[in-house]
Length: 257
Image 1 (cartoon, rainbow, N blue to C red):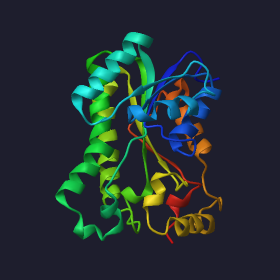
Image 2 (cartoon, rainbow, N blue to C red; image 1 turned 180 degrees about the vertical axis):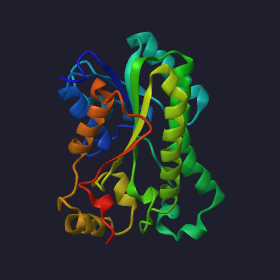
Image 3 (cartoon, rainbow, N blue to C red; image 1 turned 45 degrees about the vertical axis):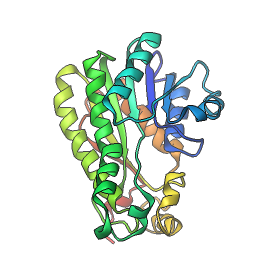
Image 4 (cartoon, rainbow, N blue to C red; image 1 turned 90 degrees about the horizontal axis):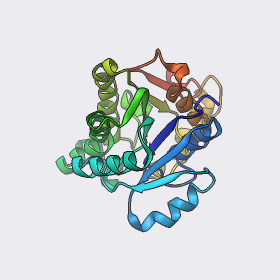
């Protein structure tokens, strides 16, 4: 129960196949009190049903995690109802479909800015607002999600690879800035998982096959396994770790061919 008595906010939960849900499951099993944000008031019933297995969990609408005013209002509301928290999981990313399906060279300016704004800047904004409104307890931990396509060319990942590169660099700079406040900032580079977002990548199933063949452990990672890594990073057991990109991909990233 390494998260006992800790309040963890998970931002971006969508369904039971998402990495965010895997993180929630692991954190809850390790004693965490869970809070969630999601997009769209019309999704309220669906999200409440989704998180019903997490006793005492609460969910709040956050329609744009890259909008200063919206994030501040949501965080202040959560703080007023629940007090300070001990960790935030940033599981938010988006790119336009055409920017994933077309060659990267044809990425529009609007598509480029959108992907980086939603997928990377939102983490910076979340971190800043949390600091400004004194939302985080001492020794709090911030965790975001990235992917191998940030450093290597993955067919069909395109602008998301650029956005994840920005996210990883942001993680390091945030770790430097927030370290003086005893706040840790890390990213998990998860192996490919069959999530709703993954459906936007062309030939995604072929990527899974390559992982099974090439990764040292010859298997694909699960959302629950990534969740266990997040639980460790959210816990006091990782109090000497910050500014890191932690790979949870069964070792695939170490392979040269």
